[in-house]
Image (cartoon, rainbow over all chains, first blue to last red; front, side, top):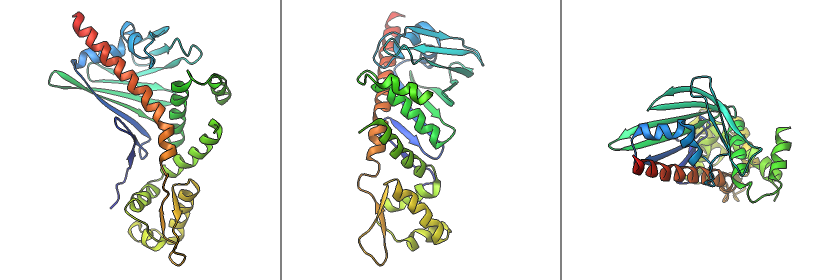
Length: 156
Length: 113
């Protein structure tokens, strides 16, 4: 019998089309509490969130259920990444809402290391596609001058 | 290629992949070509229903009809998932970089404590 839910993707990233979930699994040489803190303390988040490695120009974290967060990369000043925290259970779990999707980050201790699972759960196939599309737009904006305008048109 | 063209094609791909029966059909075709009758047998679905699913998969460019006219077997299109992958790749890369940053950040934090 064929698998009910098929996954696809290159090494390190899995897309589960059955549950509209994008999943990353990573292992870090640090205790779970330390990795959790890196996700939840603004002075730490500021250092690593931007893919290009630039410190965030805005990094606001209101760490409580219903509290909001705002991250702005210096290279994308008009595309703030904002959302709401849903569940905060240090050092095991962090759940937040982002762009109508749910981000779920689990931290599991494995010896002295931490296994981190990041899941982006979308409500539908359309949302999954939209999420990837916005992510792609962000990732390639540095090389495409007109992309900011494109995003503006999509949002309008 | 413009972003818009690529996006409407991918709408079709993602729509096609959103249904469990169609994903199962793709899994079956990944093992080799099959006719409508062969495809409908394991699913407990009528041939017209299977044909509808095949049409969606065909329109998304994921499968194609075989050369043998009588059975009209379907098979996976050679570049079926290539577009979807090239679309997803920048997204994956962005997160890879982010995790590499986090790794380096944690190493610095450990050194400082």
